[in-house]
Length: 277
DNA sequence: CTTACACCCTGCTCGC
DNA sequence: TGCGAGCAGGGTGTAA
Image (cartoon, rainbow, N blue to C red; front, top):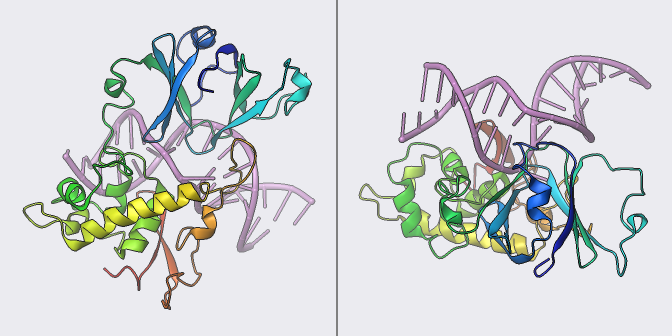
């Protein structure tokens, strides 16, 4: 997409989770994509117009990328003229012949256009915490962020104001790998003065490790999730606890059974043997 | 400042 | 076979 120009944007409804910005298709038409990046769970496309398109997939959002070599013919894409797959909400066409379709069953995703200058200060990004794969994530940082917190580790790790980018799956997996109980108060990884305990270093290391392994495996395809080319991610085979309630703990030599509890309305999976209180 | 919970939306699975 | 309950990867807003 980098270097490509939007030729047509078909916005098929007024809102997803939030309303689209005013004149959304018109503000994109003719714009060139200068760069693509990511911040937390947002995708960011910097445009030649001085605006950036930021996109959040919510729970079920996905982009499908298709390419018509040569002239674009609707029939060459994944739906025939006059028909429309359910929940295809936005279709972006590019001068390269590429077509990018945004599909989102539950419509928890959203898009916005914000000035590229001062992107970090925009309302979506202003309150975000550190990147879990950035240099800032360390035992020292975790200790400083979690010091004195009585909120459970699970909730603290999911709090995007502290660390921005971890979701339910990888929080469960990281806590399991670090041997930490999800209900333990977040403050246990720090001393009273905010110095990291060994568990803080371990947790930082396992967060990095599980994310890097998942990325290398092509992500975690669940249910209806797929890559832009329709292929599947395979990291779900690497889950040690997530969605494995009642199954044996996958840690070598562990005889525990994975348990499921609910914390702040979300499922938490853990092994009480690997993750004692 | 916390934490808890309802809510946003659709679709799938499970138990009866 | 049909039907309601519960659940799902995300985040927000409100109340306590």
